Amino acid sequence: MNELVVETDGLTKRYGDRLAVNRVSMTVVRGEVYGFLGPNGAGKTTTLRMMLGLIRPTAGSARILGLPAGSPDVTARIGALIEGPGFYPYLSGRDNLRTLARYQSLPSTEVDRVLEMVDLTDRAKDAFKGYSLGMKQRLGVAAAMLGDPDLLVLDEPTNGLDPAGMADMRALVVSLAEAGQTVILSSHILAEVQEICDRVGVINDGRLLRESTVAELRGGATLRVRATPEDAALAAVMRIAGDEGVRRVGDGTLEVDLPATAAPEVVRQLVTDSIDVHEVTVAERSLEDVFFEMTGSETSRKKEVVS
Ligand SMILES: Nc1ncnc2c1ncn2[C@@H]1O[C@H](COP(=O)(O)OP(=O)(O)OP(=O)(O)O)[C@@H](O)[C@H]1O
Image 1 (cartoon, rainbow, N blue to C red):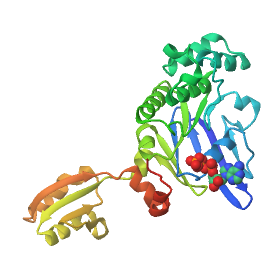
Image 2 (cartoon, protein in one colour):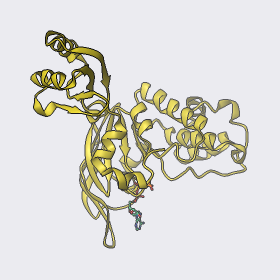
Image 3 (cartoon, rainbow, N blue to C red):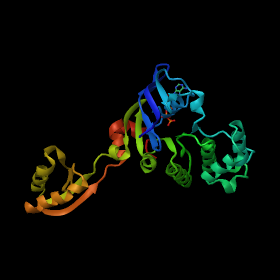
Image 4 (cartoon, rainbow, N blue to C red):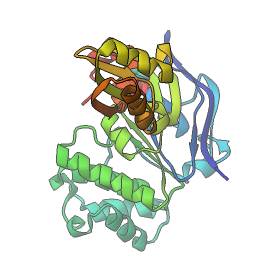
């Protein structure tokens, strides 16, 4: 059975006359990596802060593990990296974690476990201030993983990292997911979400526009057919895909709303009609295309949705 780790119902946060989060109802299932995707200012951090019980909703509710967000039993079962980790600069990575572990009455073996998990064991004796940004973020994830939480919340964990640091962070999230960890990861980077998330919630202007698997969001692939004469090819393909299912996209190519599995049938029809087939390819829509369609491309592009 799919156990709901997070369930929000009409979650809303108003700051003055600004609706930062507007009736967001979302679910996160145990064991999945949930991508919370949206441009800057969309309402991601505000939603996550309400889930963590750090701020109160204006309306609606969030339940974590079946309990109201913010209740002490729940807080202890969530690990979060939100708006950058705070550590003592002169203490080593290990001593920083030991301090946190002591607060939570956890044994030092737990510190070793999480250091190993984020691949920082070799550098654990070094002072935090000497760490690269990527290492600092990984230590933040290690801190969040102390006590083996049911839910790990990562708010823009790759923000500000160089490409190598980003790749390390993605690999870390994938390895945690493989170990069964439930993760919510917010991001404005589409490629990142596409690469590592099972399901995605798309948020813009405080509203959740869609919640679905990455595959569903991208929709079916389309076929691109280049055949001559084009008019005859258009008529032939329309007999399979319907009048609305075929478009001319210029340079003699037709775009057809059919999945890759329909390619042989399309080719057969064209050949039967004595049409010359030059090329049939499968074009998948990227998550990026879908996102721009949903959020209104130009305003989103200006907000630098894509990195
Ligand atoms: N404490 C606050 N007081 C007033 N307005 C706020 C506050 N926190 C957030 N907002 C506003 O609410 C909206 C959503 O902000 P939020 O930080 O949740 O977005 P975000 O999707 O996390 O963006 P980013 O990727 O930039 O962090 C923004 O318009 C922001 O200016």
